[in-house]
Length: 342
Image (cartoon, rainbow, N blue to C red; front, side, top):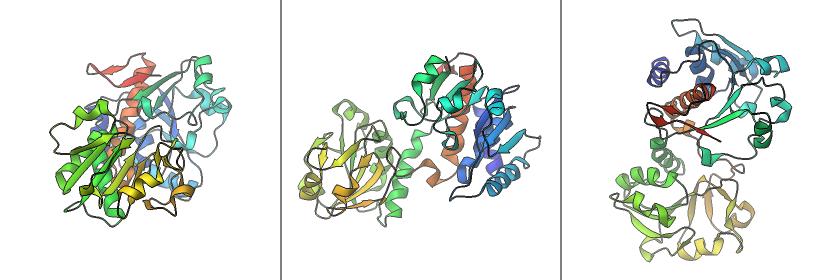
């Protein structure tokens, strides 16, 4: 099943990396697919890994190579645990993947002329901590974000499923319950599209410019982010919170965009699901319940991998396609933007 899903994703994007060298990561869980996709497209792949709480170098190497062995053709994948200048210098594509980050001068000084970096997410999600943008520009290293909403990538339509996973994980049910989506970014309408079909009532607070994107969903518009007044009818609702920039603290002391008193005074027993966007944990911990208890700054409270392989296969295939397009100095696939230049 997994083998077929990987093959379909590569075929759908006509992913072609023949004669290219890809430096990416080898990882556990759904992210095991990244080097497989690149090699299936014809690339020589160097997949960097390291010991983590998720698995040892030996375990990750076995997972990767065992999956590679299931395909009908031999895949060129070398799992490495050291990033040598010689390997970095071979790469045509260097993915902005977790184990390789940050992509800074220390690593990129060895990159060859013409190497490209596909960001495995959309342009607006870029974090300064991930890579040294100034150094990339100095060295004329092309960067391109992945349009996750391209119809042949289509990752954003999993965002609602991810919200449901959080709801179930915290012990709540969508059926017969009310929810408040507090949001200021493009995730909102995709989350609402799913939740509005399965929960009793959904109230939305988002930026006014996005209000029309919720048309036809049957939601209640609560107000404009971050200024909103929760109606009495929603005092028992569970909050789903997503705000960008993800590394900015949004809920906390009175000086932050949304104060803890705004939450506690308008909800009877506040529960905030931290989909994406920082909150001041020190300020909030004694004021209301939130889940997860800790999220590293700038990171999402739930990853697409939490709901299975499908969104990661599509995302990583899309990111590699962005890399392929960057090498050709192109940006569109099937006449639709896929690689957005940074």
